[in-house]
Image (cartoon, rainbow over all chains, first blue to last red; front, side):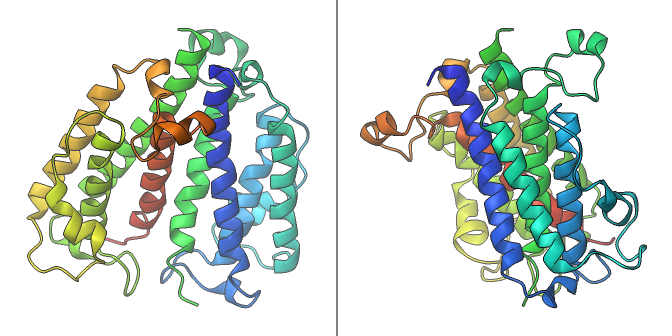
Length: 160
Length: 160
């Protein structure tokens, strides 16, 4: 493993660790408990599960890895706040989506070379990327890892 | 900037962003508000400020960058849970410590080369590091960035 591969591996290890911790945290709640609020008047656990799934799903096109699988989650879990949309998917389905999107992403990630990680993401134009080469796939990976950790801190507040 | 420098810069950008967001969040509370709990029965903001400062301070020896500056914070903010220790430092002092430790760390970080980042941290022995070269300074940086993000998610729950 050369230095570039090692640098990328460290970022991937952090991603995998945070996905696992978050999965373990969600799995520690029954389907009924998933409707508990993380704090009074704040998001319920079900919202965070849908939200994290939808945000991860958006990484597929953002990293040029394929089309989205769960675009239907955006309305209830990204565009709108918790409780704005009635008729959420079943908890058991959301758990499956979360596990699946992370499996799909991990499969892709394991095939990318350091050079691939340094390619631009699709939210930046080719022209701007010449001036801002740090706006690449790896920056998305690290940013999304922090996003998961941000919400994991909230999930861990919930008393069963 | 070569590829290794770019890979490191992305991790440093994420560190700087999360430190800034967290500083901004703490600065949005008055000293009195710093005694609000993040959720009922959970840590108060003052505890998170001291905790994050102490954990960041531990990075100095962990990354072989120098001796600790705020070891006296450990008893109240790492070893013990919130409210276990009476007589906390003044909020204004804690704010100064937080700003200072991050300035000190950033000064060091800006001088490290990619090769420096791939050196072992001091919690792993030289023998083990041969087998596990990913347990290096950069892994600490990324892990501590996620740690800040974890608690930032909690801080953002507090209503003023």
